[in-house]
Image 1 (tube, helix red, strand yellow):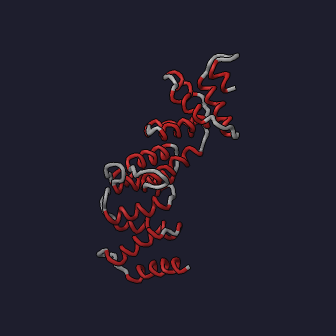
Image 2 (cartoon, rainbow, N blue to C red):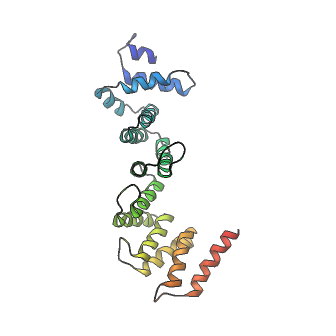
Image 3 (cartoon, rainbow, N blue to C red):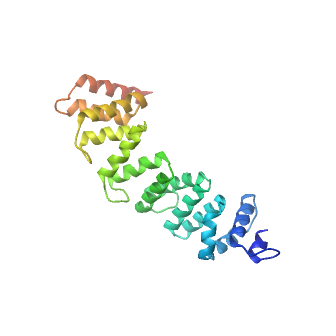
Length: 238
């Protein structure tokens, strides 16, 4: 069927339909079709690409993303992963997150590429992935793959915290403690860190509370600090 659409045998020539059926064939174990698929993908006209994006063929769009990645067309790869997700393929977001970690840390055969890693996190975040949103905030806060922007990081962590996200709460508490991207406010730091520690068992939040109760002038309370030290110690022992 793919060959019929590709060559116009018995039907109108249609590259997008050919791609759909080539991918279907590959997914059920057909051999020696990957090269043909890549040749078709590489030869698409602008009109074909427009039709392909509107087709809703999520599996084929995912293959296009993988082809673009292999061809080192990073922006196009991200665009097709997002399109595949919008067409109903949740695996496309999972793939972007996996690739982001690979390019961030230079593993699984991928060289370190921090800007590309950030772009992948950002695209996954735009698709609604909560973990990706925390990664975007972390990158902005630390200047990983993008210019450091503590104000934007604060805004993202605040949104996440208000949604009940552990990393959002813990990092918001830390930011208020340090006063980076926002005016230092130890009371708010205690509020968010305590919520993250008590409600969500966040060790990072516990460490912020230890820091506050152990060193912050006007808030030093060694009994409180020791309480959280003991809780962390017990968790490590367990």
